[in-house]
Length: 293
Image 1 (cartoon, rainbow, N blue to C red):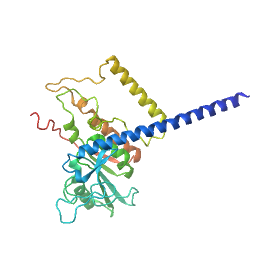
Image 2 (image 1 turned 45 degrees about the vertical axis):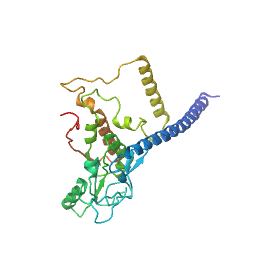
Image 3 (image 1 turned 90 degrees about the horizontal axis):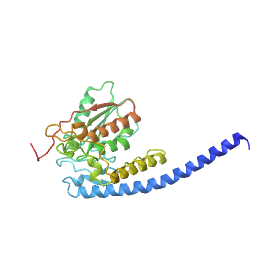
């Protein structure tokens, strides 16, 4: 057999082996993902049981909970509540495909974005009306109110990655961080896990859109083994806290999961539409709530 044919057979064998390994990885992935989605959905349902506005929400395997699509209150009732079929807190449906000569805006955040009245009690609708008055050339202005009350930045990042970035808005306003500032206690050591991971009981990062599962699983297995070995050997945590006055952790340490979420949001929009402008709003830290001056 010639060297060229041997090389071809070797390459074919490697390709077959990789294909079998990838098939096995996908089967394992599907099982892990199904379990993760089930755990997160159950945790979300438990949280909603004590939520004052749980009539607006539903448990969700990806986000823990989300707005209930198709929810609306009759005309004349106050406050007006409306969730469109795509899960956005607004009356209007915005198609994923862009209309010619349209200007598309998106607002992402928590209750301060979601608001309390679909017709007047949220800043996205006022922003849309303002931009519509200023728009030139008869451009149609579309707005996506992607705020969900009670969410932390991890959930906002997941929604940007899985849904909102596909709309390729011209402008995105990120008013994210109010709930993060209340979730991480600066008088304690810096958190080792995000509040979202802790609250929903499963740190599995859902990356179902990643085309090849084998390397992702291999990296995850390596990181898991590394963490297990570290815990057995009693290794010190990689993140150390620095005492600054009363505080045990500096702001970059304490709110590092917020900055990671913002990086993920930016990456999602950049991947879907490089021309998107990101407006990052300043959030005033207001922790701790009802515990210390």
